[in-house]
Length: 401
Image 1 (cartoon, helix red, strand yellow):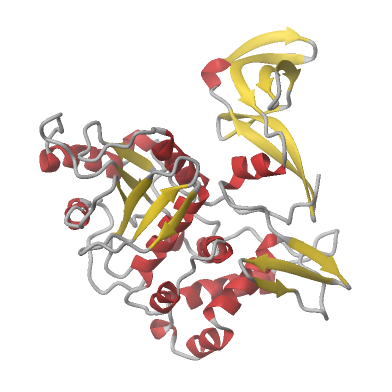
Image 2: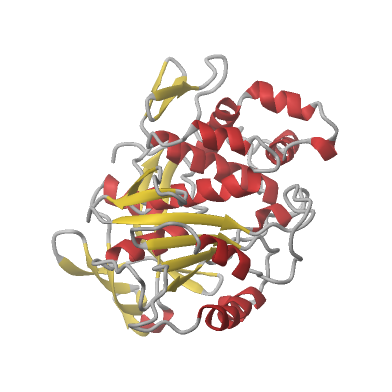
């Protein structure tokens, strides 16, 4: 495929490898050297921009400009957001990995961590407490914490894994494994940025508070990936935190709400598994005291549905519920929020002996007339991009290019 591109210094025309995945075209734009070999970096293309072209070995020409990462920092941000590449080194058969001011290291009696998943499993066990995990495992399954159930499902997959030609083990993650690894990665992002608060960890290990605080942790990690730093909210009725957009200096108040479903993630009460039921969550969020532009994250907690995004039942319900409940905003009747982010991460609905359910795309509702306007649209755009980056976990540790 031929395409115009910008390499950070000039615009040019070049030849790119093109593949189609799930009906979506991707262009190979870079290669990242890692501890597990070269990782190919693909960029999603707009299919409407592709034209047939039998020239120079290319079957297609792409009319959209491809912006190529010009260095490690920009390449990492393209994939994983505004988080620093792993700070790591290897010596005497041990890999050392920094997470904020703490350094973790692999077992000197084993192989050094080659894959990020191996480190994240260790990091989560150390952060949550191996003793706490072992105590939970001793309980009857019905009384175990949900995190430990996810951890045990991952352990079962690893136990059954078979070595490949490189004498390494590989698994196709089930929903529980995906849930565990993405929780671990979000915890790492917070730890590496110095904001993994003890209160979050304490509540995370409380079965009744787990679901809500997990969504708060996702929300905080998403803001960090979007280029924000976060701090506690000091308002009378505080939101989860205040986020400051580093490149612009603009602040937003951020709230996170997660819908409970009876019998899901240990919830004893809650709504059914067919309706989004977002109005009660939204109304509670709108009662918060805010003096900054306001962004609300709502987790739907629904099973995966295979329909296209705009045809999903939860999308149609949200679309049909917002206007009757809130009314149509205007210059004189303004919304209290600037954006509401709806997400659905249905991994925990999957069976442990089956491939993981896929992530569903997030939906962002942006107010045309908010009470407190943002003077720079890049703030919300960065948040939207970060929402879509959730689920992207580095496969291996980057090496200096």
